[in-house]
Length: 450
Image (cartoon, rainbow, N blue to C red; front, side, top):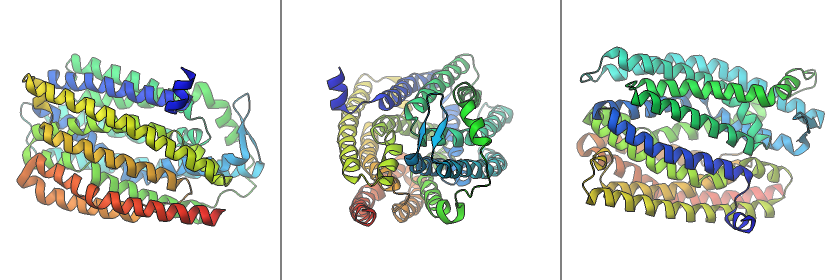
């Protein structure tokens, strides 16, 4: 078993991350079934449109979470965890870590208020533009407001969790994500079965905050207090000079990602109604779950990538990265084939569940785009470990082009227009451009830093 785990590239961090994502994917299938059974097609559309619109938080989060992971990983090259779970080592690096966390928390405290105000107003305007059938406004807006408030609170807690993850405690963070997923999914199922409708999503966001707070209190309160009490007379990290040049590029890339991945469901909701939006949302969730499992082979190594860059161990970095890419791609190909075979089987037996997702040919197109997206995401993780974001230009171009195509094509062609809007930019532009950027940037970074 150990040899098999080694061949597959599975360590403790990957094991718990994959377990979380396999659980989430499996639980997601059950959630999909419960949504299909207990929500009307119209409410299903609202359900997945909620999921897409809440992603607007990226406009306020501004890439901070991922920035914290990368900068923490570089500081941890001179720090370590003690047996008592304190961070020990170079006092200058520890002070820089403290100032990084403090600055991030101050920014996120302001951003969280912005999230609540802007998303609350967005929801009022957006959902008010569609006349819900057999659903009261209170049943839509109250769960939306609860979801918005606790999403904002979760942003703040995620900053602390990101610092812990960047500090190398990836497996511990993966355990947190597993606990969050189990409890939030359980609450979602309970409310769906008991007629809670859209309140299922709102309750899930509450659970995420509560579990995260309890986990931090039980496991890292001593470390957090130690960092808080650290002498702040020593100069810390210069946010404007060191962090901001990377952060704003990450923010632009993440915002572009919203237009690439999340825009289709809201446009379908407005132009073709909740049912079409629900089909698109459910299909994207299935494809996203598969990609979420596969990217664990890369994402869990992100703090390690940062450390290896900080210590100039580029040959080790390359070996670790390329092995993970091959392993994750093989898994994603197997998963995509299995899911497509399942969809075709449900179609052959005329299962009622097949009406809740896109037709098989569109489903297959989205899975193909997912494979390409996995390659691009993997390349981005590698380059960002150098505290740089060469993919920003590509992300902006793809975001603008995808949004333009979606606005033009979805009103006339519906879900097929959404898939085309997603596929053409990613396959014809994203893959070749992204790979060229990756090769050139990798050679440039490694040569410069050696």
